[in-house]
Image (cartoon, rainbow, N blue to C red):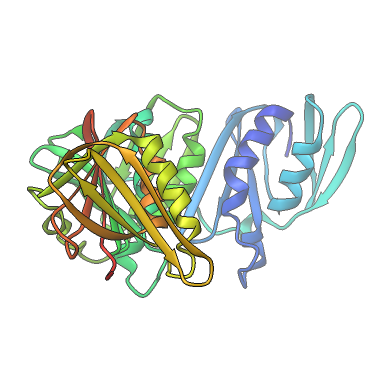
Amino acid sequence: MKLQVTQENLSKALNSVAKVANTRSTLPVLANVLFKTVGNRLSIAGTNLDIAITHYIGSKVMEEGAITVPARLMQDFITSLPSSVISLELDENKLHIKTDKYQSTINGMSAEDFPVMPDISKGTEWNIPGKALKSALQQVVVAASTNETRPVLTGVFLHSHEGVLYAVATDSYRLAEKTLISTKEEIKLLVPASAMHDLLRILTDYEEDVQIVHNDQQILFKAGDVELVTRLIEGSYPDYRKLIPKEFKAKATLKRTELTNVTKVSSLFARESAGSITISLDEKKGELSVRSIASQLGENSSSADAKISGNGSITLNSKYLLDALNVFSGDNITLSFNGKLDPATLFDADNKDYLHVVMPLKS
């Protein structure tokens, strides 16, 4: 293998791929990334056996070949180099790296030891705008569970319902649902949230269409020169729509920044009580108030002006509420609930394509 690439392109590709390499695996080769020439491009790939990412970059290929090199070392080294043209040359299992001012040799492992990258040759194929997918993932992954005892809750559920595609995540304490696009496809895909976090990194500066191909076991996301393949989670997703109330007895609409501020202040006094804060609505005063008590520290009560319909109070986890408020994009938020034992629902007051449900705490 002998080729030339730019430092910018190689660094960008390694930043996409290297984080998926698994340094804790019993297979040492999984801590490496695979360098392989493909026509006039260099393919850089990494996998932890659950998720695989491949990034293609243009290169001047003089000799074809393949090698695996330590992901972390290669990423840190290439990122540290100045902007320049980098020459890569393979001699047995040693990769020689040269620029005008730097030259290094990195010991690699044979490409034959690297797992075969997954390929979905036959599957259902459709596209989605990259900007819409990125926005949806930013708003729903926060609600996915990290507890492996219920694997189905550790995923993001992409599914169609009455001709509309939705992205959903829940950990049973909160739930986020984002409306994506209209679709004629029948879609039911449970994608690991960990893979969606990696996809978000890939989509940072990408706004073109993302190509999606899937079968019963795997799903491929293709964004320009980057491909991510991951296994789908097996199992049936809970019928979450039963959790979402259709009508509300108490409702408050106010500036999102104001609700965020009063919640933040109250959360400081709620650390002793697992983040427990009580929100009360007063229709007559047109006021939303938030109260928290810490037996050792003191207590706090904060309020904000709001457009109120109905009276009532509910006790919520302040962290979950703040997580939700931070992923909304609109200026105004509507908080609705029915009673102390029913879930609270958050909507963007001006756009109903995203909702966030937070389950109440016993007060």
